[in-house]
Length: 284
Length: 190
Image (cartoon, rainbow over all chains, first blue to last red; front, side):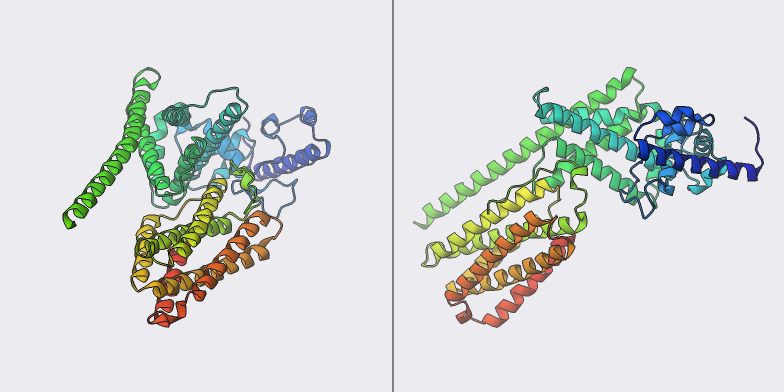
């Protein structure tokens, strides 16, 4: 790779950005992707492009549609950076490498915090989106009658397993990521991502509770997810079978807890009725 | 009311809707109907066998329908219920039973106070939604308007049954309405 002096690099970066926006204009005009093959240099950004991307927050801002917003650019850099995480960890180095594969200067990593927080949050958000899409597809299959509706415990087990398996390529560096997610300035975002993922799983599992159960179910599943994740960090069995067995046991415990709670309630009601009967008898 | 619901099962299907506003509205209305249910349950526990029993029972049945509707809306819009539900469970029952222990007029006074608070509250929600986008929120507006009319009817029934002759009517009414305001404030947020 030839070393460009800083002004050339900046020019190259802005040229790439302009080309990116031109390509998006062409995509919108012709709605085909054949144009990309005709561009002679820098194939990386072309392969990344697939038309206008949804931005992180869902509100693209006031920019016109054919201009890539800063958020979209940041997304692309972070996605590209994931490839380098197994080697460099969740660090600014990985982000710099990612930026370089997009033809941008390594200084683009300066857009982000030093501790790699945004990279990790981006990854978690991406995994959650993938999980939602997976669950949505499964739901469609069930609705079309092409698949059987799973019992709740199996559904939860499969959903949690699918989500945790997304960590496997990055498992060596995941403990580092977990500790960064627990830093005070990251906790609001990481908590938000965790709760919406758990809510999604329960939603697709068919939870329709509108009473306090809404909270108990989500709390229980969060506990199951977090503990299973921790077990996975320590697991060295082939294909993490120990982790999946642990998960199965925890989900079974949770189901039993639900049954026990019902039994306790029925017993309580029976006891109260018995006492009322006794009171009536005594007063007569 | 016979309002059909579009099933919005994914977060994407709910875009275009002002989530924070709609979530608050559904959460607090659900809590309100739940509380109203418990109030009437408390009143029935004390006055069930008296002459106003059937009247209270009928109003209670309507509240049950309201609660059922909000349960459906809550699932359709994927809104979380207020964490204070167990508290409203007890507080509602205690308020209903307590006001009923003051006599039939006391129970009616409680009904008047609560229903007035609720219909004012529904009115301000209707205003908010109309300001946002009457077309987008057509279903929700229809439901809230219908329920607002029902609550006003309950309010008038309470007045017809001599609520104003209850002991310490104005003090009772003010205290209950203050409690309702606090409950609304909290349920919107937590």
